[in-house]
Image (cartoon, rainbow, N blue to C red; front, side):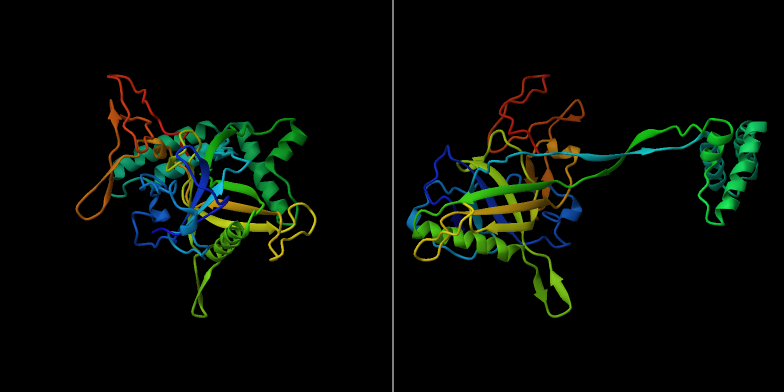
Length: 343
């Protein structure tokens, strides 16, 4: 049976909403199923853990490790933020022409002399067309600026043009895609243990989280990556039908305030009357467009998972179905029973 810790310590029903943390060992390089380097999808199509009928007396406080489950109440600050990185980039006309000439020369076939000569001639003619009296003067000024900069100055060709002619080179500024980003999630949980059993649960939850976010020593030379976490918003034993999903996360920061009411107060056994636990999770891999395709998959006789994407007119449709059968009208991409808002 899967080891489970939970707060508050009460029975869950098919309508109870909660946040589930499942502890997993960091995947190795050889794993194509869960290896983040391979870009696999995480948190999808796993068998749902049914904790709704778990008797209170059967859950013993424990220090969880791999495959352990921690159930927490829905946090008050539920939000997601998706972003990609863009940055402004410039390429003036002279630099662009020089690049084209260089690329033409570098990409020529050295054995095809006739074609080489023609390509280089065409590129040279285009480059030469840009060189009138103004551009020749500009090149001279640029060389002079570089020479002066050898003595510690910081003179650019644009500063010279602005001072002498009241103009600058057209930079052809454009916003270009720069990189993907990783998401960060911060949660705060206020805990007020009501009895000894719930106190032990809270203590074990804190200790288990601390243990699994800590690095392991491998001899005296290496440190092994800490365990990671699979986060899911749940309703009963199913994924929440609306809220966003997570990819596998690392627990990067954890803090506990043992004086939740800004005053030191404990029960007879020393358990704080109120405490606040703050957790910061960071996803291991970015979000990509194909993460919003159908999550259905098939497994071959070797255990390899193959995506079973639904194509309509050659375009994968957004379905995001979880544990239910959707229906699609003929010629219509609308999918019923769509699971949530995606990642």
